[in-house]
Length: 115
Image (tube, rainbow, N blue to C red; front, side, top):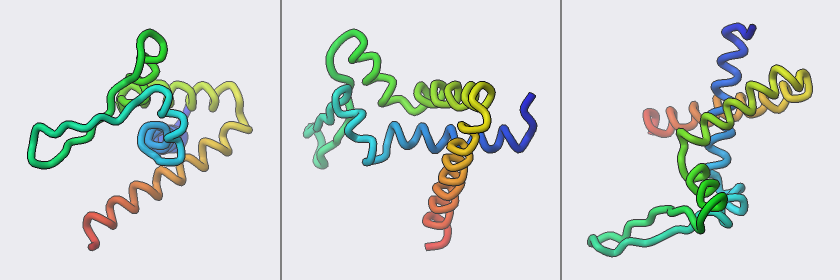
């Protein structure tokens, strides 16, 4: 059974891993085969949005990689199972993700409220 500390670490790590896969530029290569950026010119300002490519598994993966809620479930499951089954090696990676997640949250807070 995991305690409060472990849950906080897993929450922060899941947040960071999900954001890494869905938004960060460094993983754009991973999303590129499954997603395409489309542009809508029906308003004064162009509007950009992401749409899954293809059909079947390719489309399903595109939908997964464009949905923060969906990917969050899978990254959380992956990290939780890793924590339980692959301890201690996975715990080091999970802690790094958790620290990066906490840093991202602090950065967003300070950027919004301190500038």
